[in-house]
Image (cartoon, rainbow, N blue to C red; front, top):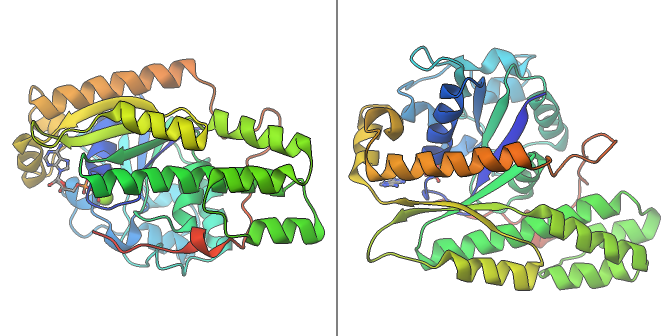
Length: 325
Ligand SMILES: Nc1ncnc2c1ncn2[C@@H]1O[C@H](COP(=O)(O)OP(=O)(O)O)[C@@H](O)[C@H]1O
Ligand SMILES: [Mg+2]
């Protein structure tokens, strides 16, 4: 079964696809079979980064059941052994018209992909489809730029993902009216969730805390310049204080003209300009991630049981989708 890594940000245009494609290429160069899935269906651009301008088939063909197997939607890249991608385009995942059953079928088939590593390049926003895809992975990476709006968005994204994770886990243990009420409640802070589940029993409260501590999302700061800096430790402190979870910083990528040049040549920057500042930082980030993957147990897997299934109804604060870019 492949190891699944999700990359999300809450906001578009911060570098998710750039980071996904470069990390994926590094994994493939280390002998892994890698598939990147472009889940940003409404604003898909991964195929363009790889120079495939009108890809067919796409993820939409799979979602519309024109194609049975997700493996058949993988486009192998002839110039990178072991690396393939699933293009988005077409139907909008973030518009909320993706049926729960379609999403479940997509998530289930991720495990049958012919790959060692699957990278989910998630859609922007805090739509619950995005949160579920992000949480479904074994390892979760968040991305922001030093821009204050981007940092606030990524914090909001991590908070809502943490709330969603607790609700998804604990609501399975509840039934009837209590379950209905808690899964439909509009929580805006993790503390509110802990309180609400705490009222159903002390065990639930303790379990909610342990779910939070096991969350441990990773973080990459992108497009850093001398002027646009941001102290990642302050975000780590806020996440620790208010979400009771550890935010692990994998790396900081500088703003670099070499990235734009590489895009114009339809190549990942680590391929086009391997010694550029961005490539050096991306490679260091890759090694930091690789080390984590080697030494950490996948966190979304239950020890002896199957993967999680998600409730179909959600509080409105979690289903509210945000505009892109
Ligand atoms: N480190 C960087 N240096 C320079 N430009 C960058 C960098 N990272 C991203 N960009 C620019 O930002 C644009 C958006 O990046 P992209 O990965 O498509 O964002 P997202 O997938 O989050 O929407 C890219 O097309 C590129 O021009
Ligand atoms: Mg993208």
